[in-house]
Figure 1: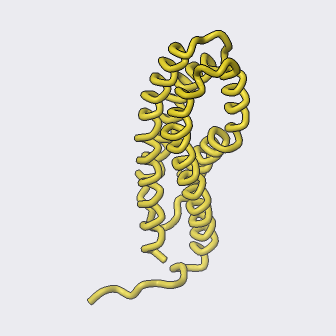
Figure 2 (figure 1 turned 90 degrees about the vertical axis):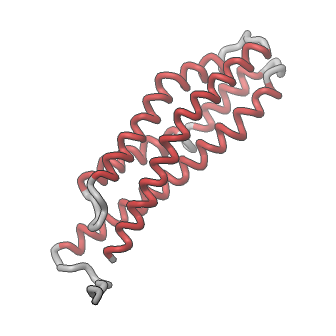
Length: 172
């Protein structure tokens, strides 16, 4: 015989904390899914277009403006999701394994580390005028490789959030 499923929280004391934790999880998961998609789009659709733009004399200026325009759409949400993940460690919803928020936080920190150590210096070089089209192509090649080092843990983070959502829903 299976145990009955509960449609309401198990006690009045757990209800507010559980609801806040579930809301935090839902918001953070939405941001993680968004940044994962935006990052994949940038790395697999935008970066390849730069090979065609490399011969354009104003490529460095274009790239610098693009980078500034991208800030609110990718780096800022990634940082917000990482901070919310830290909060999720303290306000984990009922049913969510303790190790999942830790694993997703470590993956997000890895993505940020790779971005700071490798991607940002390459992006800064691409924003510097004076490179030939061949030099730009080499920088884009390197950036594409670095992108995979961000894509894989980014996808793992998204899968981790999907698992957390499933676990939280099973309790409800």
